[in-house]
Length: 217
Image (cartoon, rainbow, N blue to C red; front, side):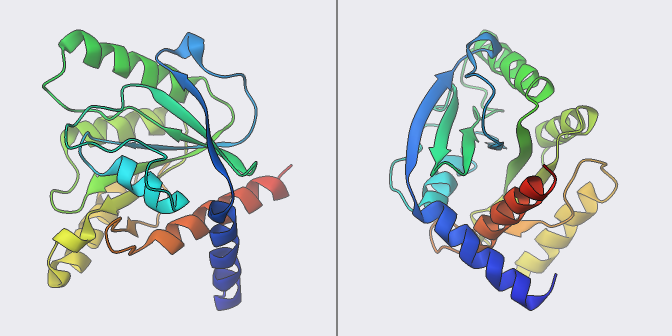
């Protein structure tokens, strides 16, 4: 991608997320999803990976997505209209053992149904804690996304809590883990909701994806 294109998408991404961002729908099961409409871009990750903080950082708002020191608070598929450009979907956090087995199974069923049956879903950003790397439960989600041919990209969060010298190796290991996965986007995003690291680049990737989808219509 030429430098001019990078700058163009950085600005486009900034403008997209500088506009309105409004809650529009919540669903606890596939049957209660909103009607098919705008392009959807979803954010998924293990509980306590910093997903709500990242969504808030992207949109420049302190409380668009709920943040909590208690993992597992996001128990619904939450849909937000981002300035009429696309619908951002905040998916339930997964992998937190303190909730009931029945609740975990219900979340898993809803997530699977959503990924399998949502034609407007353009990409899933899967968040990985940069301190801990990919866990087996993350790989399970990768396999489902590959199976359903849903494009996904990995976002390393909490980069500010990793030694600077260790970050290149974390990125390289993450890229290697998805190198042969058919639905995985090759670029790995390094972010920090605390410092703002990588937020402009993540916004730019959304702008680029939307431009590609518009061009294919």
